[in-house]
View 1 (cartoon, rainbow, N blue to C red):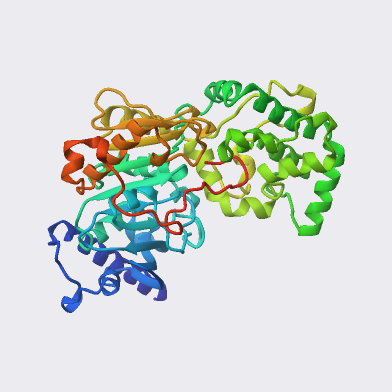
View 2: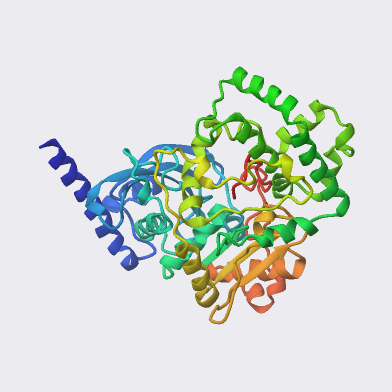
Length: 480
């Protein structure tokens, strides 16, 4: 009886939410919530399935942390729900809205993504399904795929469109840029524009020669030589450094059941070193790399590897929060494999390990090679109002999205010298103005001066050092 009641309650919530969503497109810009209220919190909480976690003050905005009841399986909405965490940075219902996801957890502190600053709008941010606490219980991992996640975004958008009736732009960086692209592929009528930052596009998982070509030319020869030498030296000194690693793991209670052994984890950290440098550092940071690896102390080698790659990551404790990413990498997204021509084969025991090695064995995985081919084909021939921004020195940009015949008002731009934190502000002036003008136009807020002369395009909101933090956050391990 209790199971039946729970099932009926879940179905009622979902039907109510879908009914609200169906009415969204008919809502007037000045529509109010229950009993004519115009208070934004009440209007948000009038959405069936929406709950308030907390409200945090910020000058000029109202910021809400919320949860929203989502179907575990959008193809069978009555089969159960989970609570998905979202945030709303509210400015004004008369302003456009930016829909952001990083593809991982959502920050519960107020923050403004670059397109939000450009259009001076509202921002809705979504936590990706299966990242805790937005994980169904029990977790049916087969329901973690790009279509289900896109459908999460579609339901959130449809539910909130009646509150925020102006134009919407989706955005995200790295895995979030991928997410924004997949959302556009499956629900191309939702958004008025897409700004995807540093989004990898691994179309054929087994063909990764583009990454090898990237690492052969990125930066300068001097910088590449320094990095390669430190990476090689860490493997040459495997025995003493692994002794230190074992002590470090024991001191912190780290274990290695998922990856299989401390030895596997050690090599994975070391092999991430060069990639990690270019992903998060700039060419000028090469001065911080030991200049003569063979003469460097064990402490210097350890510190350089740990600073860039992080010896804690491939432990069970380090991997656990990112199980959803590695599951997706091993089932749909793909993962890069690169060669190490500067390291003798005798020093490399495992090479780049597959995502399967980073996911607990009790979770079944099967790769779907058609998933990325489908998205890539769609983008090439159907992209509309899409902007892709890459960093010249970011390894993940070695396999970018590309545009073909059929793409309309869409662009792929590269910021010179930038890493995984590349953005519109880092583009050359002409391209920065173009990108800014297109974003303003897609959002329906381009001033007459910009419409007449796109080179005059500027962000509409003033830069806020706290809200608009631009530095890319260094994360350990090889992941977008």
